Amino acid sequence: MPMNKRLVIGNWKMNPATSAEARRIAARTRRAVAGLARTDVVACPPFVYLPIVSSRRPALNFSLGAQSVSDKESRAYTGHVSADMLKDLGVEYVIAGHSEQRNLGDPDAVGAGRIMRIVEVGLKAVVCVGENTRDDNGAYLAGLKEQLKNSLLGLPRERAKNIIIAYEPVWAVGASQAMAPEQIYEMSIFIKKVFADIFGLEPAMKAKVLYGGSVNSRNAADIISIGKVDGLLVGRESVNLPGFVELLRAVDKID
Ligand code: PGA
Image (cartoon, rainbow, N blue to C red; front, top):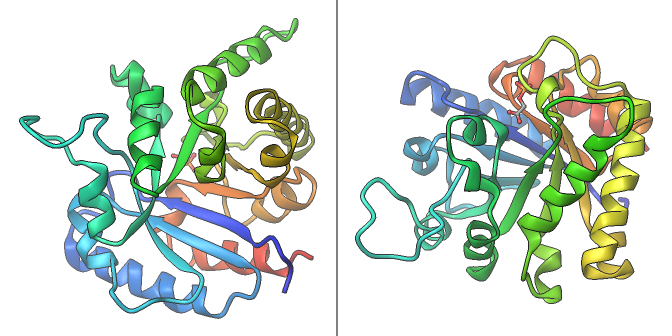
């Protein structure tokens, strides 16, 4: 088994409509995941389904994730969910700063405070970054660098191992086509370079960079093998079975 397993994170978004369906998707995903040799899978259901998808029994290659978390510690914050609460339910990964959240008026979703809350309690932060649009003169690269720096501001070097970067060009999220794998490769190198500027070379070599945005069972293998990313953040296809099961098998086959 390779030292570095691929990581596929399923972001269920606001799906499915019922808890019975959530139970079914979770069970089917777990069964598929147990047969994988070199892929770790994380399911991120909506908060209300976390107890359904969670299992106190350790499951092979399978972990629980959340789609968001409060940037506050406990006390009077109506409607918030704290990192401690998520940890108590068995959550190991938390998505921070998803573009859909940022676009809905939570510009601070990817703020360093929220990421700090996540890593402080020992969870892994899946930090989403990505440009809204592309331009010919490369200004989007400067913007991406800025996003990364702002997100990781003040984070101690020893916490770098709790950070996973999910590169999600906003124009490719919820779209009809993913970014070309060759471009993904360039972007993952750029992100590792910025990570190295912030935390140093060694943490950057170990850091996982994922790609997200219209990944499906047909394009996943190329994104991993040509794009050379460490894994995927999958939206729609993660609740579309058997598409997700096919996607996992395709990724797992890659050497
Ligand atoms: P998508 O979403 O795969 O449906 O484009 C990606 C995401 O939400 O992270």
